[in-house]
Amino acid sequence: MNRVLLRLACAMLLFASCKNADYKKVTNDPELYRVTVKRLNDIVLENNFPPVIASRNYVYANIAAYEVIAAGDSKHYRSLAGQIKHLPAVPQPDKQKNIDFQFASLLSFCHVGNAVTFPEGSMSLYVDELKEKAKAAGMPSDVFENSVAYADTVAKHILKWSKKDNYAQTRSASKYTVTRTDGRWIPTPPMYAQALEPHWGEIRPMVLDSASQIPAPEPPPYNMTDKNSVFYKSVMQVKNMVDSLTKDQTHMADFWDDNAFKLNVIGHASFATKKFGPAGHWMNIAGIGSKMNKADFNTTVAAYTTASIALFDAFINCWYVKYKANSVRPETVINKFIDPDWKTHIQTPPFPEYISGHAVISAAAAETLTKSFGDNKAYTDSSEAEFGIPPRSFKSFRAAALEAAISRVYGGIHYKIACDIGNQTGRKIGDLVNQKLQLKIK
Image (cartoon, rainbow, N blue to C red; front, top):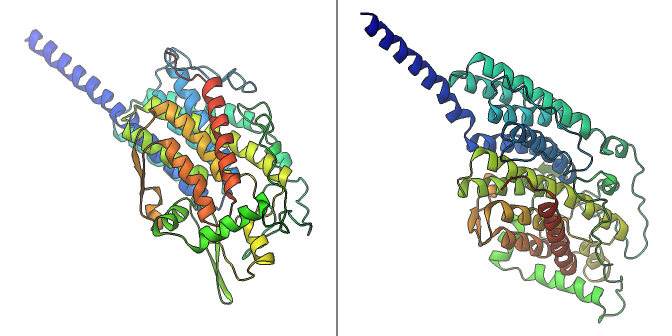
């Protein structure tokens, strides 16, 4: 009889142990991380975050998640502290405590996402969903409490560090001075908005030593009097392309538009339509790469993190170049000298033309995703389907970056040289991120 009871007790313990272990099938699923990043992406979209600020939202949230993973799997992943020179050592977990590091990484991501977006607490309901999901899957109470506590510890550490990146100081910096000097950027229709984030080049980068570390050559000199000048030919190239767009070129321009806030004007009425910006688009592509490669949870977090770092530094570099060059947009020149009624295919964003932001940040992200998931990985991007834009297919991440660059010429908002140089600059930034950050221990 005692043997029967003993076997029954062992069976019950084994059942309880298996049930408790089942929760990891839920909390360690990489799809849950992809969904979590998309949730932040949706909040960024809903609250009209400009592209440069959006990149800041993504990078700190992803780094917080990654640092939790690195702490929990130090045999395979290195902390970014020390690799990012100004990131102080992250508090390490108590080895005596049982922690679900994947679950904690999700919570840490959300904690930071909550703090860097507005209204503050936008991810709170989603966090509640995550916690209920973990409990329903059978996570033991001690693991739950330890995971929540460690997530909060890492998130607070990352947030404290984030406050030293000069973002707060640039909120009260001087505005861009608009002058009517030929060749210099001025606001464009229909919004005629003031210049966006003219001091973003002063934000502290992650891997770059400074915003100017990877310089871009000077743009062609402004010249609308000589029809043989590089500048005049560049202007006419944009006009001719927009005036004769093919169906595929139109789709390309629309697909990569990524306008976070487009003002639509019909007669005396106006209304805004929103999409996620270019950084959000590339966060989606990181998710596609993860899913396509069947990457595990930790690999997925690492890929998102390096891509977000590349995007963040690329925007800082690009914005430094933009406000140093202060180049006029094609729309302004064409309307003044060639055709006052000419319109771009997509809306011109409110900042100087040279160099192309899409070209720089796309190429930088593509380099890190190529390292994470491999070169010549064909994929289909359906990110824009929620905005009614059909998907596009690409032979590789680099091919997508090249298309993102040329799409801005088809859209009528960039000269081709700004896109070509932007792609070259972005690849250098991505290469630098790949070289300096060695997340995985071989």
